[in-house]
Image (cartoon, rainbow, N blue to C red; front, side, top):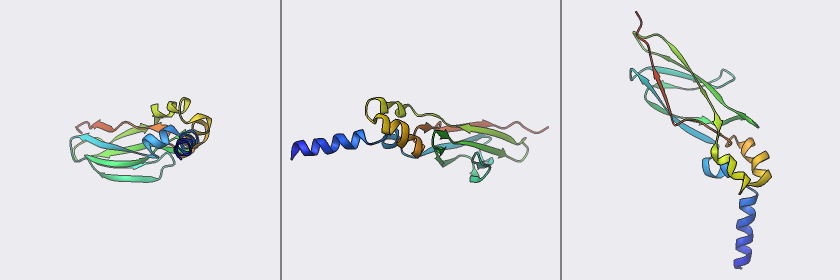
Length: 134
């Protein structure tokens, strides 16, 4: 029974993606601005609005767009008395993705993590300082 349990556990590790297990398929980021209370609209790389609100606000982000393609978001900020500003939030390689070298194997590295988007990561905070209008 013990050997069988260990075998099942080993197979689960081998047949999974390291970043998918550790990080998941979505990420969170807190959108901050100076001044506080700026409004923002966030669009995905296809131009589709996915979030909007007032800073500070924590949003949920899809990590990937398509297999081996991380997501990029455009965030447009505005506040009365300030110039509008655009911020590009681009995904970077998730360090846990490299764990597939030891734990997830080729299946995790080439299929699971790329397909779920878990191979990508975002910073936990976005900080934008708006310029006063003159």
